[in-house]
Amino acid sequence: MTSASSVPFDRSIKIAPSILSADFANFGKECEAIEAQGCDWVHVDVMDGHFVPNITFGPATCAAIRPHIKGVMDVHLMISPVDAYVEAFAKAGADVITAHVEAGPHIHRTLQAIRGAGARAGVALNPGTPAEHIQHLLDDIDLVCVMTVNPGFGGQSFIHSQIDKVCTLRRMIGDRPVHIEIDGGVDPTTAPLVAAAGADVLVAGSAVFRGGSVATPEVYGQNISTIRKAAESAGASWA
Ligand code: DX5
Ligand code: ZN
Picture: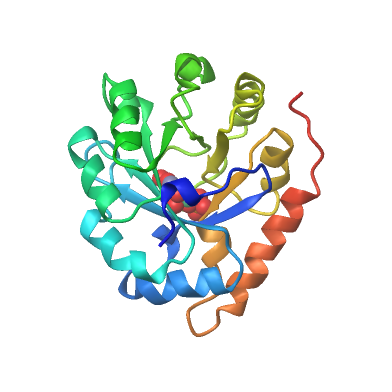
């Protein structure tokens, strides 16, 4: 298991497959397959049917898949309220826990609770939420997740208006050790756009799992490599 403090910070491109697009009956083997095929982080989408119109799973499932993940387990909480569950997801082995700024009135308290529980703290912004919303939180976070779809489902179309938000956030972050993560509609066409805008963690569900299975994991490897190469070919446009 990776502890939060052992996650090194760098701005290289990291591909984080979302297991929302994996075979739900086979999470352990799916996590092992994507790591063996070269992914960097494993992105785990937790949905409550209240903050978002879909339900996935909770801390018990995260704890069950943890032994099957050698690297970073990146837990994206699309739940409201959040605070009561932070400790449980940290105990389940999450390295990064991301809460939505829209999920409650006290995001600063939530971020403190996440760091206090020993995880890295992420804050997610829905497409309608401006970058400036987190201006006074930049020293309290390790990651900002820019939603490039409305949260709730995989397989939606990338919302291009968010690219400008990524550029703004990259300038706001400056030299702080804060990752910019993109979540939704990332594929070989959109990856270079967000990489150029300053993102370093690219979540991809459909674009990684499409066409493959635990029986044909090399397809995952090809998909990961294609997204990574596309992102790495982009020049910086945020400055
Ligand atoms: C959406 C989730 C995403 C989603 C991405 O609410 O947070 O992580 O699974 O899926 P794709 O890559 O298919 O858009
Ligand atoms: Zn997500």
